[in-house]
Image 1 (cartoon, rainbow, N blue to C red):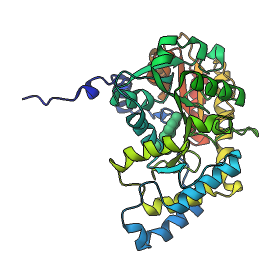
Image 2 (tube, helix red, strand yellow):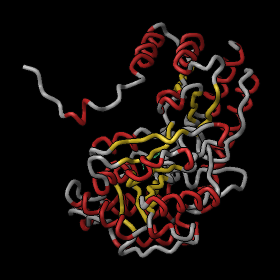
Image 3 (cartoon, protein in one colour):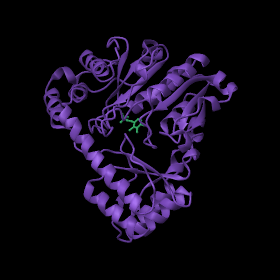
Length: 386
Ligand SMILES: *Cc1c(COP(=O)(O)O)cnc(C)c1O
């Protein structure tokens, strides 16, 4: 007897990397040393001050009980202080901040709080796959907004059909952007908020890479935009900023009704973030600037090394101002074929752009989550086989 799966599962897009996974195993079985530049999983250890806070918190029985749903007061205060210090954005820690089990958890639950069947949800493509999937889980209709090189990988709001805009209840945005490495300026956020107000929709801004930025660039928060607090929330993560991907901690901040709606879903599904992890999160939100700068400097050296290597291999690419991704146009334009050929010939694994949505075709992504020695080796292989 077959097991019946819910339609929301059968509606999911097919797993696009299955064939590449198969080839990876086959190449590895030949004894080739694979250099995996595919996954965006920080390889740097969590900073010592964060570890120390977690160690101490483990021994405190207060943290052994169920945590509060929206996060402990001290964590929400630390998040609010971070928003104030970093962006000059004032949020009330009582009503406008909620702790998340990683920002992915909040992003995935937000449509359950906001979207009804028949509602359209706009999302950037290429993009983080969760926007589309969480919309499908909520019964909504995901509508891609293409991010194109000729528009600096920003969506063109004028290109959204008016009937879609009328049906849309939410729009996901993500800057600094995964996978393109693009950034958004305050003028773009102004247009986004104007669009949201005109069409009466909410904006869910994913800012997972807020602190991973180079050469003095400081990414702005959408919440700095006048009017944003009436219609937007922002998802923050400590996974990339403080190399804490395994800890599962982030927060959502912004419009109080939106934060409350997301919190209401959470109270019915999960039981909050482990208290010791929240204590670690407080230390991460107060990371000393020198430690933060070390993390950024590491990614900057890797970025320069990879961009120079790609250029030397005949692949023209500019240095991104933020994120730890290099997004580049692939010779030939077929991203799956490029990734497969590269893997077969060099053992270097990159992510084909088409895996981030059809609009990502023609590009590939390198994640800077390997050390300089491995990246140098990968680039040498690329140059050798160009
Ligand atoms: C890594 C990432 C996240 C998820 O981060 P967590 O806080 O670890 O859940 C969210 N959005 C984007 C675009 C990411 O790249």
